[in-house]
Amino acid sequence: MAGKTTFIKMLASNAILAQTVGFCLATAATVPRSTVMASIHGAHSVKSGKSHYFAEIETIDGFIRERAYGGIKMLAIDEPFSGTNTVERIAIARAVLESLGE
Image 1 (cartoon, one colour):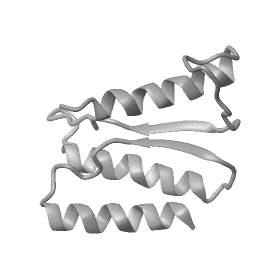
Image 2: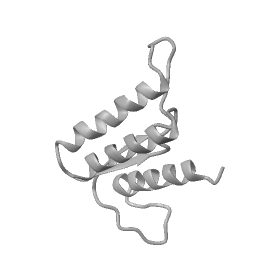
Image 3: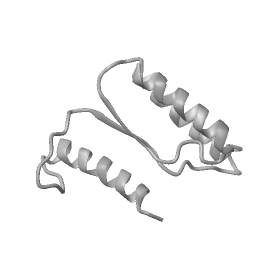
């Protein structure tokens, strides 16, 4: 309860504000023109049959596919793969970040 999610949302919101209306809630900022994509609290649905984990995998897969098109993308990712055990969560998050960083 340290406010990590709120901080991540604030960064993404400020990037969007800076690009759309030309200001953000900061004393000074340099914001690159880029698409903002987010994975914060993935939705799950009994009706669609998608678990929290599956919804998150779909979102992250979208990030990786978008990366193939190039250009700068700002990704706001909060607690990736939080529904899995710690060892697997860290391993898959690292693999995703390495893939996105290439």
